[in-house]
Image (cartoon, rainbow, N blue to C red; front, side, top):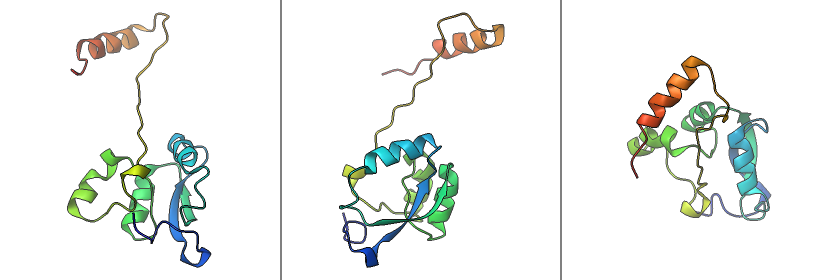
Length: 122
């Protein structure tokens, strides 16, 4: 997208709000960024394992962050946040609810019965 994010001039590095290495989202974003240091000029400024914390920092103008769309949807809609890169930099994530095959506690089995009965269509 814009030259403010893409490029390799050290003097024009963009403040980057990163996830910690212990964060699952952090590992996903790090994998996406791996090998792209020549393309993006990002300078880590702050890190957190929580996307909500990174969004708060972005709202305060502290830098750019990869955020789940579901978390930032309202802020994007209101214009308080804007997309920093085009869609080629989006990261598709699928999250699945899993369980062991072995029987679980009565409460857990009851939960699974309710979830199984309410499967999303599509």
